[in-house]
Length: 189
Image (spheres, rainbow, N blue to C red):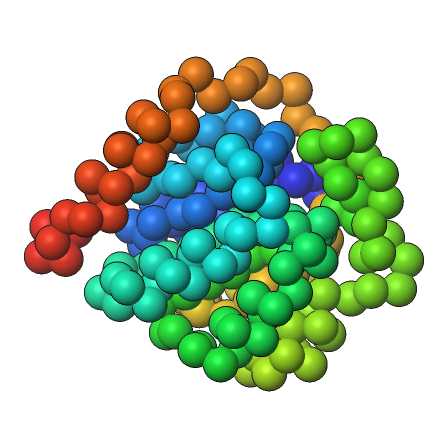
């Protein structure tokens, strides 16, 4: 499966559950924007390694909202401490989906440690996360997403980037739009 396919499945989950959706930096954000632009999306245009932490912060501060974060293998490898903090906090409203293509896709597809021996699902379990799922199939991903609103999903995809345009919104506009949506009272969600 291609990363764009996985992102489309995750976006469908976000739509179905009215979740706030944090996208990983670089090209995955552009792919999310192309697949499903909505006010619930926060596009990370920088800060590699922090989508999982931002998602956790949102989940803890907005317990009445469902939160989904899309992160990449390179980003999670850069901030593995987030997996331990997610396990420690274990919010019921937070689903982290790690899209693992075994490469730093936004900078030229250089291999990451997951292209060899590192298994992020095992790392997440080792950090104490109780609900960890792993798949490389679109059908399995759809099923896992349908049945779970929290935990960690590691989905292996092919390396490579979709040919998608840049996001035309400024970082300030992205932030304002997302803040307006995420600050609405839970009764209006």
